[in-house]
Image (cartoon, rainbow, N blue to C red; front, top):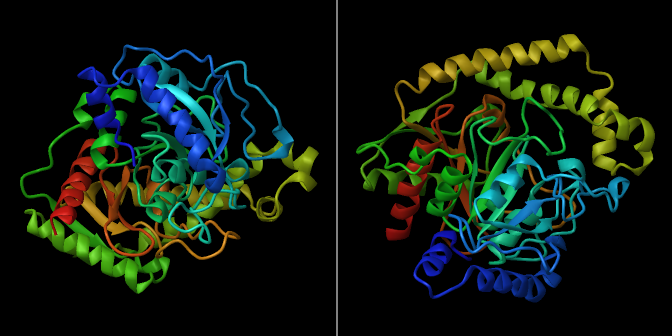
Length: 411
């Protein structure tokens, strides 16, 4: 993988120019993507490459539900084939202001739903890379980009990061602007970042959000709560073993780890997530459903069919359950610095007919709290663990994740 921090260090010391860094990224696309199917289109060859700025020389993959003025934005659907926005999304404009080059649009499932895109897992082409941010996660894992953008409504950042073996953060809700991003659920959609290491994504997030405090050190003896989310069902034995391994590594690094069983209001909130999501998707995609229903892929079409039967009362009840759980979670974080939990059910499933299961992600998306995937080194397809912190405490989530990442490397 390509480190953002190492690339920037080489540019700063003069051993690499920003233009050469972008040329190298274009070459990696040509070399690696024919087998990966992560890249949909590239920025024009004559696109400007700033030589100045804190992210100068950094090529960024942009999930294809995020507007770019110089490249089509098709939302993973033929309904929008060739559609060119007149403006960049706010997040893309911010990247350009920092000197980065949004170099290519990465594959997404249609409208960031559950119908798989063509992308394969870079570790084994017979397995899914996850979704819906499949192209972004796979492109970073394959060493094409040092940074890529994704979005998460259920588990669409953390899960593909775990399946592809990359670092990723789903930040606190609305820390990053979603203006110019195709909406699925306005109460849940959250922009996220993929990178080669926790330090890389922490640096990128601090710059993009204009919050330097995000690059912070962990508490001297962080208090971690080990949580299995029993109401979400069981995980594969390998995923649980990776979680245990991460917890033991954290203890060796000085953390105090205790077990946490989430009380019943969190189970209610977990069950409420699909209702909140689907009622909003029904409205966000109302035009596509009314005018182009038959052109929608089968899983999304069925999801929207079922969503027509949900009532406003169902939606309001789900929102109340979410609100109660958020208040309770805020109190729980008075006693712990971060929660350590599963990123996915297990390794990336075999076959390309599914993007995997988001059961261990969706509660935290509904809570709006920062979540970080930490890859767990090992043989075979990648595994990851998830670090969750208090709302707005993205720096602590990243600091604890980095401590675990470094402890795992020393193990």
